[in-house]
Every structure is written in C-alpha cells, then in structure tokens.
Amino acid sequence: MISSSQKLNPKIFDKDVAQVPVRRGFGEGLLVAGEADDRVVGLCADLTESTQMHLFKEKFPNRFIEMGVAEQNLVTTASGMASMGKIPFVSSYAMFSPGRNWEQIRTTIAYNDVPVKIIGSHAGVSVGPDGGTHQAIEDIALMRVLPNMIVISPCDSIEAKKATMAVAQTKKPTYIRLIRDKTPVITTENTPFEIGKAQIYFEPITGKPDVAIIATGALVHRALMVARELEKEKIGVTVVNLSTIKPLDEKMILEVAKSASAIVTVEEHQIAGGMGSAVAEFLASNFPVPIEFIGVDDKFGQSGTPDELLEHYGMGVSHIKTAVLKVLKRKK
Amino acid sequence: MILTESKIRELELKANQIRQSIIEMLLSAGSGHTAGPLGMADVFTTLYFHTLKHNPKQPNWPERDRLVLSNGHIAPVLYATMAHAGYFPVSELKTLRKFGTRLQGHPHREYLPMLETSSGPLGAGLSQAVGMALADRMDNGKDTQKRIYCLTSDGEHDEGNTWEAIMLAGKEKLNNLVSVVDRNNIQIDGYTEDIMPLEPLANKYITFNWHVIEIDGNNIAEIALAFDEAKTIFEKPTVIIAHTIPGRGVAEFERKYEWHGKAPNREEAEMALKELRTLGGKIKSEHE
Image (cartoon, rainbow over all chains, first blue to last red; front, side, top):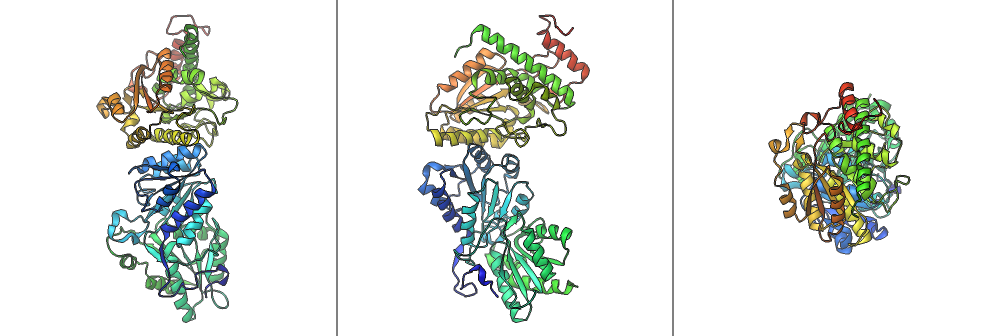
C-alpha cells in the first residue's frame, strides 16, 4: 500500500493522473531559488525554453547569460562565476552537458569543488522521436563517478522543483537529471524531500516485504504500479524512491535489503554504472542479497514514442514484474 | 604607470631570481616543464610585482584582481613567483610534485586554496576567467576597477573551448578581462605553425572583437605598458600576444621545443644556474 506518511498524490493510480514534464519543476524551482538568493545566476546553451530556464531569464535578465551552442564554455564559465561567489545553474540536454563536457566538469567544477548546478534535461530514451543521438543513458554513470558531485534524479516535476530549491542552498557541485516527457505526478507539495535521503513510497500491508524495488526518476511510477499489482497477488513489495543517487542513502538501502533480502533496481539509464550499480556496490560489501537490474542493457536508443522505447529496451511494467519474480526465485 | 629605469632593473633581477628558483625546483622534482616557465618569468614578475592588485598576506581579499593560469603545466613559474611575492616560503618550492605537497604537478586549488583555480587540461582557463569577469560586472557594473587576468598558451588555441571563450568575451564586451597569450611557438610535438597553424593570430582576435596588443614578452617595460593600455579599453576585452622565447635566460634551452616537457638533470641545472647567476656571463657569480 502507498505509504501514508509520504503524502503522495491520491490520484497516483488513476487513469487521469496529472501528467507534467519533470523539467517544468526545475524551471519553477529556479525561479523561486532566484527570488530567494540573488547569488543565483542562470546560464544556458541555446535551449532556454526547452530546459525551462526561460522563467528565470524573463524575471532576472541581468543574471542570465546566453552561451550559444557551447557546452564546454557553459560549465567552465559557470565555474569562474562560482569562484566569484555566484551560484550558477547551467542547463542543456543531458547528452551535451554532461555528455560532451565531462572533462571540463571534472576539472573546473568537481576538482575545484565549486557550487555549480548542472541541469541535464531530456535524459533517457523517453526523449523519443529525436533518436539515439539525443538520448542520454550514460549521464548518471558519468556524474556519480566524480568526487564532490551530488547526483539527483527527481521522480516528478514537484520533486524536481524541491530539488532545485534545495541544491541552490548547498555549496556542493550538483547534477540534476530531468526527463523531457510529461510523466505522472507522484508526489505533492507535502511529500518530504531531502538531499541524500531515500523515501519509502510503498510498503506491504502487513509484515516484512518479499522484495524491495529501488527506483529513480519517472520510472518510480511504474515501480509503484508493479507493487500494487503484486500486492493483489499477495507478494509484499517495498518501493523506494532513490532520488539522490549520490550520496547514497546507505542506511535506507541497508534497511530494505535486510528486511526484503531481494532487490530490483529500476532506472532509465544503462545498467552499467547507473543507480543499480551504486546500490550493488554498496550491498556487495555490506549485505549481499540477490539483485535484478532494470535499465538499458548495453545498447543505444532509437526513434519512437517514449512508451514504445521503454518497452523495447526492457523498462516496461511487465519487465519490472518479471524481474521481481526472478529475484524472488533467487532468494534463499 | 611608466616604469623607471631603476624599477625595470629591479624587476629584471626579480625575474632572474624566479628563473633560478624554477631551475632548482625542477631539478628537485625530477620532472616537469622547463621552457614555458622560463619564457613567462618576465610576464609573471611584472604581474605580481607591479600590475596586480593583490595582498599575499591576505590571499582571499575580496577586492583583489584575479589571475587564472590556464596552461597549468607552467605551474613552476606561478609557484616560484607567488613564493617570491610572499604567499608562502621560497623553501617550499622544493616540494614541487612530491607526495603530500601543496605544489601539485599541475595546480590544484584544494591543496593550495590561494590559487584562483585548478588547471592542467588545456583550453578551460579563459572561459573561467570570462565567468569571473561576468560575475564581477554583475556586481560592480561596467566601470569596475577589478581586472581578471588570464594566462594562456599558444598551443592551447588548438582547443575549441578556447575559441568558445573568445567568442563569449567579445560578445559580452568584457573590458575587465585581460588575456595574455604566451606566443612561444612551441608545443609538445613541435612548432605550432607545423602542428596546427594559428597565424594570423592577432587578426583572429580582432575579428572576434578583442583589442589586441602585441609585445616582446621578455621585455618588462613593454609588458607593464601593455597592461596599462588594457585599462584604457572600455568596450572590449584585451589580449596581449606576448612573443616570448621558450627557455628564456638559459641559452642552451632557448627556442628548443624539446625543453617543453622535461626537467634539467643535475649537470644541466648547474649550467643553467651558473648562467642565470652570472646574467649570462656578464657578472661573476658569488657562488663560484
């Protein structure tokens, strides 16, 4: 059952659940962050409306820099601004930032430990018709491997807004990964959000869970749908929204691994190096349990609708359900 | 401010001491870059002992000018000049490149927080300086008195990131930004015009809406004058193309690209130090 303490959207399983692009939450959050703190500045590489930074630009034209299509310059210029006391948010598509400018992010932002907030929009295969060149499914791996870097992948627009406002108040370099497409609104204004804190969104009606699904990004919604289906089949499921991938909420992961003894991770990303890998690295050393990984298995994306692509690359509801049944068989 | 003859002599002697420190620290380290640091000693000396608004006893003074070293591999000249300017003891220079040192092989601000940035991978310094200049203008307006200095190499003009920064600075008319190109014509694989021609470099900057000054980068009076001229330019960033002789000060090292990326051995270092201490044989060394 849905965890009541999380104050999630009561219409979460309804057919007419509100659908909002995750990136919208970023645009709204940046506006609030900008109003609260005049050190907040925005830089964008020719995708201002697409990444929803136009809201900030319209309100604070003097604190916005249009960079042109130049992602290497985008992040290095922001690093210079941060060292002068600014809190720069830089936005582009995830494929280009951090896809194209990884070394600049490493050396001038992470290595320098300056508070630049990198916003990678249009992540995942759900970008859809644009095709594989524009579908970033490597970005979590690229960012979580960097020391000092915080990595956040919000599950919906409301969480994206909260994450944006929260990261504006930290001194750490941060990557926020956003989905382009309209996705179901899972949370409400009253749902707790804290950087570095995973939350349980679904739990068994009684007793210990048989399995825990740890999900990140918009696929949290599919994980919840699977949990509800399995509940009817008397399989107890815990669903964790792991929106902060780094630093990992080790306490929570240990807790669910101990109580469920079997885990499925769900992300719209390559299996290699992604959120599931982060969970597996931690559990392999601390409390090994069987894990199944939902994600892209060493392939590039292609054109299609988001649903077609998520289905084709093995991230559909049926795939998650199959992974749960498989991991249950592996459980000793 | 026009330099007096005596001030010029004083700065030249300071540059000579800094060159000696560079040789000593490279010998102690056993690896590192020799040609670039020696070639840029006059520019660094002029900046730290004449042009820069800074306070070595209070490195994080908010009103200071900023200095970004983009081509981090010439770190020995940065460290040596900072030590001679009083940022840290000259004796610390011998820790260069050794385990636990604040003087990392390429500058790392986590280890030496008085640096404005870390650098090494080429082409990323100018855009950071552009970011600093943009932030300064947001805070202090177009008539800001602060100056952001960036030191770049000619070789790193092969990098696309450098040109992205040049474009943005021209667009934003960053008059508080002064970039120096160490035009020494060498890079690792050979002469720049053989590897990837940059000429006409001055014209390129002009068409990107920069104010361009070309100088002899080993002439302290010219260097100081160029920095003064940059302060008079209102609607453009300024680039000073400083024609330097790589390895300057040690005849055996001068103009040889082989000295780009290696350190002198003991024999070569002793020869170099003798040449520097005697000002190329003009005076007797007190060490003999």
